[in-house]
Length: 441
Ligand code: PHE
Image (cartoon, rainbow, N blue to C red):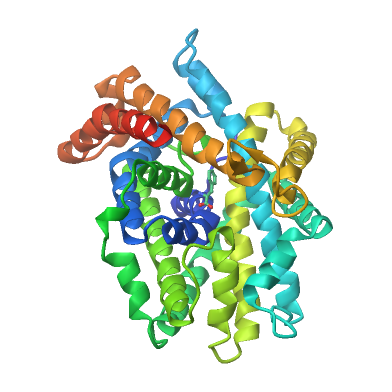
């Protein structure tokens, strides 16, 4: 073990795990998923799914990783020799690569906006709207592919440098700054005339909007936002020493994510209603509404630029975890191979992601099961791959581990331990299977 990197401080691990979790899921995806799926109903289901399903699985992943002290596949192999559990690690590897393939597309959009913000050009010219500006950006095949490539390049450069120098440092400054920025924006958005309509949309549930699909999407979002189900947190926790309180870390990460998601919602929805936009406009929502909110702030252009820089960092701390997971399985502890493999895997993911990048423009009429290529990869990963991985991880931690082992690992009060045990053994697997079944029908 001494030859492996370890997180140097407790707070380092916490920030890295939070860095992986807090990203586009909370800031970009949560608002548009809520906006397109009934607002408050989606939000409520999402929070329930986090506490009942996704958080217990997150803690299970921490457990498996710390006990394994190796990449996800090796962690399963050493703890369950001769059994097929290690396939869960490979599933995570494939799904991580696919997630990064479309995550980098959105990362590219951020770079595109950042470049425009830097010259104060996120202003629709000649009477066009912010929505038209967004369409113009994502339709342009050369720009989206180049921006996606640039985003992956940044990710590769950090991952090839290794866990300590890259991930830990990057996570430390960004998160608090992002919090503060959001708080200021929330105040601006909530004081717009007509803002309360947006608050109602977020918090007063209209149960007639409830469907099995909403539940499946809320579950997918709960996994996506905590980076759970694809062994990423196994990978991170493998760099962890014995003294860490994994239950507490898990709870913190979950709360932080819910908090940022709600803050993002409180910036977006009041503004949507106050400024006369539609909540259900899909992936462009944040890109359209945020510049409109900043327009209402003094020195808005400058703050928009700073905001996109912060958002880029939050996005990169997530994308490096995706690439790190794949690279760590591919190279194990062999540091010599790390650099070359980071490049190889990164370039491969870039190529796989090109159709997703183009699916808003030249490939927009290509569909897979009625979805655009981008949406299809998103659905396959979030709503099939992650729940499936989470199901196996629940079973592994809940049943393959003896209660003696999991109790010692969690090292918490009997109440909290048995609560976790019931969730991981019964609630999480059954809920995943039922939601799967009803959502996919
Ligand atoms: N949780 C990250 C986000 O919300 C995305 C992610 C998913 C990262 C899965 C790693 C694994 O942006």
